[in-house]
Image (cartoon, rainbow, N blue to C red; front, top):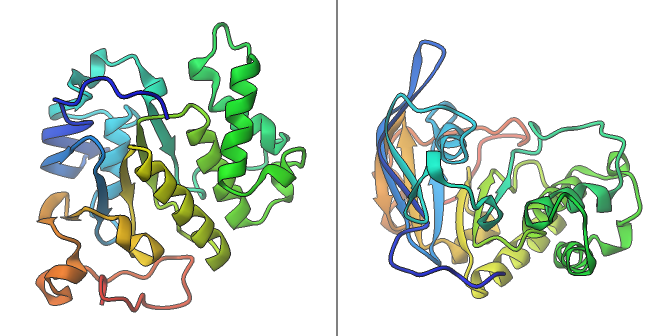
Length: 258
């Protein structure tokens, strides 16, 4: 973790953000603020706009209206991307790449290097990130030899290698075995304790529930709920929140999703 720059502006701010995929409106004017040091979960059924929302933040999806700021700077003018760590959905991350675990994680450190050359401190940060997610013993192996849960750990280590202040994660627990879920939850606990800000897309809180400060539930591209996690306000207060994830054997049975 690097020292944080000031604390007056939120880490993330969306105001009236609209976004379309093709001719279909996906975000319909959402407002979202994530304060420094806060852990916010984005929840909602498939097609509600969760992943699109975080992809607008990092610039992967253009917005048709509204304003996005990172650490008080308009996203279009924001350049200090080493402060932001992004973990994509494992199913959409590059697969079949002939690279070792260390090579993949090292790529996450490039934003802090000069001319792409890793120095002693960079290698130490990569090793530290691998240790955090329990993958140091697999450092020299090909990522293609890993299980789904191990692959997800590597993607998270790649994001952590730059020692970001803000972690943006898209379904980090999807299709991940229980042992890896516990490792990832512990990793996030340590990051939050060190002062990290976290915005993550989830379908169920699971082992991350104790970490969540606030939940924002999206439905049809609009904010349905912004406040305590749904379990705290009652599962029936959030209609339309039924979902079966493709990695799951059946309906999710938690206090969050019903």
